[in-house]
Image (cartoon, rainbow, N blue to C red; front, side, top):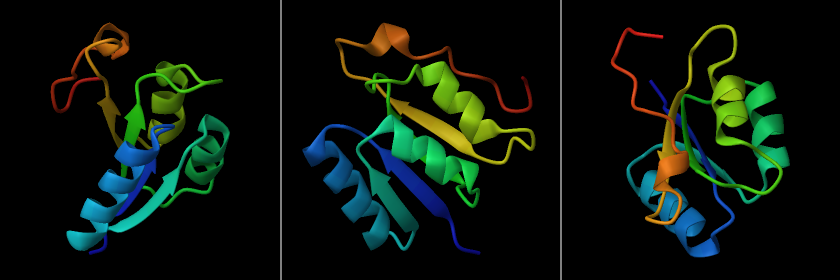
Length: 98
């Protein structure tokens, strides 16, 4: 089974690093630097895991999570937060809990 990963980060270094490492691990990866593009990719489906900046211009992290989870709750989301924006990340969910 192929795992499809979306890396959404405005940080060029971080985005390229995550993309390259995921490809080396055998994942099907796509990368984008804008929230708008990330939302469009998510609307088309086929994304299993999203790695995203906690802060992206034009997008609240909660909006991205809602778009990724969609009605079927198929995508998992990992929020990348640095020390300056760690408080923006939502609390970690327990598996099986909404």
